[in-house]
Image (cartoon, rainbow, N blue to C red; front, side, top):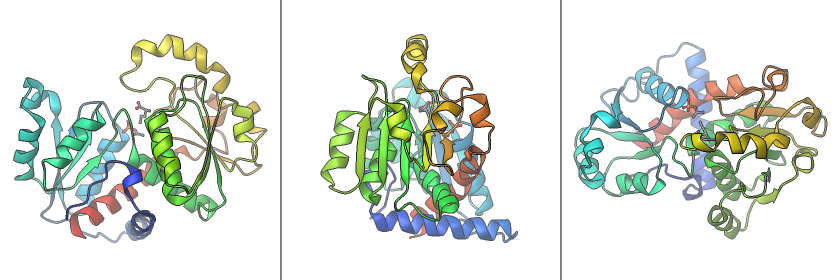
Length: 304
Ligand code: CP
Ligand code: NVA
C-alpha cells in the first residue's frame, strides 16, 4: 500500500525513527561529497497554492540531488484553477508522476488528492498542519540536544498549522510540549483532543508565555498571522504583543535553551531581532535540515 504524509498523527514512532535515521545518514553522506542517486528515473510533482521559499526549494533540490526530477506545478496555471475536480486531476497526475508534494489551504483537499491517487502524497503545508516542517525540526533538536526524550519544548505564539504538527508529534513521540497562546488563538480543540486520546505525550496549553518557557530546552515561535490571514494582521499584532520571544522571555528558560522558528520571521513581532540573530537561535540549521529531511521522506516513500 502506498504511504502518504498528510499529518504526523498518522505516523508511528517507528516511522519517525526511520525518517530521522535516514535523514541523518543522507546528510552525512552529502557532507562527505557522496552523490547518492536512489531516485534516478523518479518524478515528483509540486502543486503549490501558497508561496514558499524553503519547502519548495528544498524538495526540488532534494529530488535533483537524489537523481530524480521535480516538476513545479503552479496551481493557477492548470485546469485546477478552472475548477476541474480534484479527483480527476489526482487520477491523471497519478499516471505521470511518482509522488506529489502539495501546499494548499484545505486539509480536506489534500486528503482528497491522496484518496484518488495511487502515488505518495506529501503535505507541504495546509492551514491545519505542516508535518514535514516539524519532522526536520525534531531532527534539529536531536542533533543539538542529543535526542528528544526529556526535552521540554515551549511553543509561544499562535496555535497554528506548525503548532498543530508539534501537538501531533508530541502525541506519537511522548514529547513534553507546552503551548502558550493568547486566549482565542489556542490550537484547535479537535487537534488537541485527538492527540490527547493517544494517551502519550505531556501536552499542556496555557496563555502565560513566562510560565510556558520556565525550564524550557526549546522555545519555538512562528508568525502571528499565517498565509491566508493577512486581513487579521493588525488585530493579531495587538493581541500577540505580550507573546514576543525576546531577551526578557529567554531569561525564564534553561540556560542552554535553543530558539527555533520555521521562517519566514517577522523581526520585532513574534521574535526580536537580537534573539533571532543571537547565540540561542538555530533557525538556519533548521532551514538546512529541511533539505536533508525531505530527501529522507522522498527516499522512504518512493522506495520502501
Ligand atoms: N518554513 C517554511 O515552510 O518556509 P516556506 O514557506 O518558505 O516554505
Ligand atoms: N504558519 C505559517 C508557516 C509558514 C511556513 C503559515 O502558514 O504561513
